[in-house]
Image (cartoon, rainbow, N blue to C red):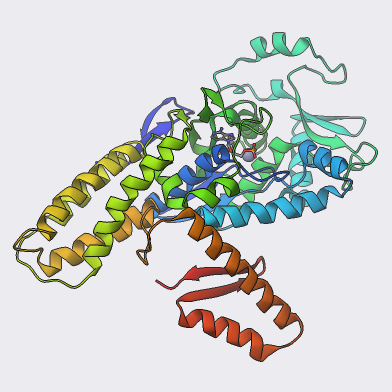
Length: 467
Ligand code: AMP
Ligand code: ZN
């Protein structure tokens, strides 16, 4: 059986066939960086991360792109409130996003493009739309002309006439049609701007994602994902802007994540009913949070309650104990049909990334394996190794809920380790700045001895545990 999942565009379960055999090119809408992200955003980022990992587990080569929206009304507003530049706000929270995502066990994307680094591409795309008669300029603003794209509404199921009725109330008389939307916004006093053929201004939000996805994944690519709230208008507009220019299908499959709710209301910054990822990660481990998310299907709403995280902790402990026990030496005669269990796991998750069913299989497997392991015969060593290998690739590799070192999941201890590591990295960076090579080497080598590896890149230094 092939991997199937629900595609928002066709509104049906679709078997997955990639554009390039063996490859998956996937884009997920990333954060607008004006604040710390909350555990509602994190649900979307974690589910997207798990889907990416699952494709890899199933043998695909995945190219995964997640943008960072680093220019936007909300960023400008936050900057004005603090009396700093919009760029300062964006830099600060983009770093916080990458740090917190790493603490969540979310693997960095292959590319995290930033809107402000793609301005030339955005301008070229808009010029192309104007040349095709699909966009027009009014006093330094550029709008997409929705009527120029007859398929508008195909993702969200909305139709232009209905939208027009709604939009007329707040009609902007400069637009040819009230549903037309901004591609480029003329600079207002005190706002950041870039030069363009239409005067100084900045890009609209929707166009950023059309341009950055195609820049790194090609005109047509496999999967575009994001939270449910992005279907309309964001993703609808992305399709219009892209296909009106290329006349080729934009994303071939659309994946949307259900909300994390609090008392049946969407967790959101504007409602103020949120917990930031960093606050929760000081109290609970990333594994417990991931476990909590994975117990609900990615399309269903999920209500956040602290008891859910406590229950997740207990469940995790069972998996982790088995994983650790399988890693210990031991000889026995009882057998375990690990390939059969793995087949069941694949069948479960292949069906619309049904992670709750996948978790169900892992727990049944845990019961069976424990029974053999702790029986008088003991588990024979090749099955013990196969079982551990299966958990390494599934519970750890795909779900990210089992730890390699086997240390007990403990949020507070994790947070301390994280803070200590930040301190070590900062000290080493200072030492390197002062050309104190002996000291910086001593820090790196000393950490390596206790199993911690440092990796330097343009974004800075990250750490990881030696496998
Ligand atoms: P934002 O930073 O608001 O643009 O959101 C970043 C991502 O998080 C988008 O994919 C949103 O759809 C998603 N998101 C926002 N709030 C929630 C929520 N309560 N539950 C799940 N996903 C969310
Ligand atoms: Zn987007």
